Amino acid sequence: MSATATPGKLLVSPKDHTLIMIDFQSQMSFATKSIDAVLLRNNAALVAHAAAGFGVSTILTTVAEKTFSGPMFSEITDAFPGQTLLDRTSMNTWEDAAVIAEINRLGKKRLVMCGLWTSVCIVGPTLSALDQGFEVYVIADACGDVSDEAHERAMDRMVQAGVRPMTSLQYMLELQRDWARTETYDMTTGIAKKFGGAYGLGIIYAKSMFGASEGH
Image (cartoon, rainbow, N blue to C red; front, top):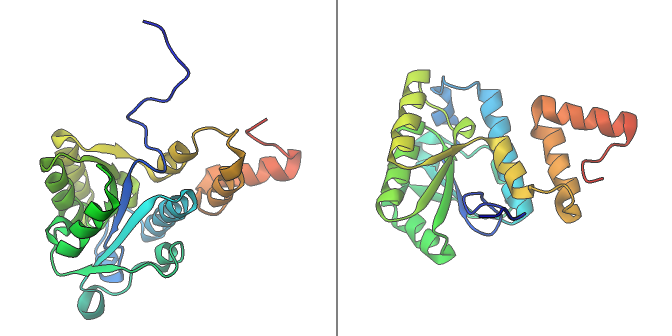
């Protein structure tokens, strides 16, 4: 056996998956206690802007937007201007015909999901997708629930079933993967500066003080 300088098949790349962002809405966030609302919005924004920037096929879905749950976070919709939001009545996104039609139209067998709440609106579609032979990832820190216990047990249940967990910053950096990819370098570091927390501050400092660049 010999090693080769090639990425593993389990790593996500921009064109090999569909991102599904589920129920990032005001009413859902009011009861979310497992993650601070500011951090949740920040992480969701990072995911959305990374996906939009890398051209990832993305589905945005809400539940009872006009009658109960309210609009999707503007940090997400701003990244996808003009994109239609698929509104549902079902708690399980996988039971909505319009969402399934879009998944089939896009044709990706690998799905990445995040949203509110972890134990209901994420567990439902992930377990359903796994049951139908899809490969599923969940961005854990872009999800939230009514308690730490609810979020953690939901993550445990999904991982035990075969879901692969990841984080928001990991998701973006996995899409970039090589700092020598100059066509997306400025975009990636720009998103990190805005939404990447202390990591983003580090980029601002290094570029301001030393003109540093990871690609050189």
